[in-house]
Length: 296
Image 1 (cartoon, rainbow, N blue to C red):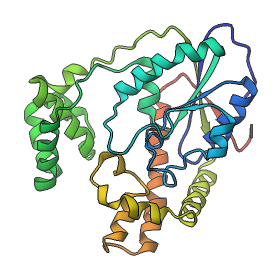
Image 2 (tube, rainbow, N blue to C red):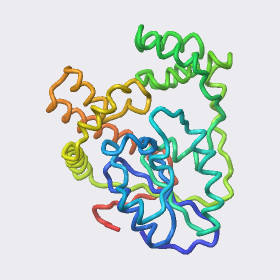
Image 3 (cartoon, helix red, strand yellow):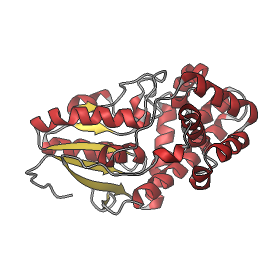
Image 4 (tube, rainbow, N blue to C red):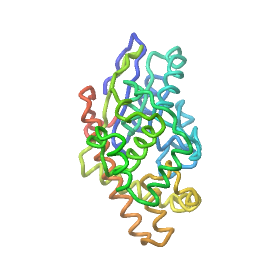
């Protein structure tokens, strides 16, 4: 990636699948531009999730200013709309210091929210949320599908009906507002007062999968299991319904062996990487950088 000179405030977006090498790439890029990094990795928002999210090390955080790393607790409510608001409030002060700011992460929805905006959705009502959670825990995902068909058939026809979290959110909003969830999803892009350049880091599939497997092994060596044991009492929190922790929770509960848990983490992380890449491919504005051929 050739360094450019920017005459207008510009947000450089560095996307890519998990384990591709975003952290190292962005650290080098930030040093060259002498600028800051905004993290759009939704798993790294939570301070309790250190090992399993491959968050930047303390040394890396001291090298370059970072924002939105470990700024929340797993007990805090946070959403894409709040992230959008927080980043847009921060950017003017960062652009006063430098014409270039870097934003990076593998959470495509969070990246898109800052770049294009998100439809305004109400914060969840705690009582309604608990009702929907209880509905899922007692009757399973099929009941969620049934309820969504009744509340918002248009959205039911579009949503991934295997994704229980999306089903739950749609039901919550529909019940809370008395309006179909799909009415809030108009997909109107918002105009930003800064330029945006998008890059997606990639590697050959076999190399990426090898890096994923190796990183999981390194996480286990760095006491990921101990971290999971400490977090196990809070396993029902939304922040912990993520790869690396939910598999170890199954081991802790005696459902599978440790070897099976580790293998499942590797398999599920590889699947997650595929989904990330599919998300980024939908946006024609991304320029691709093959790190296997262009180590930065």
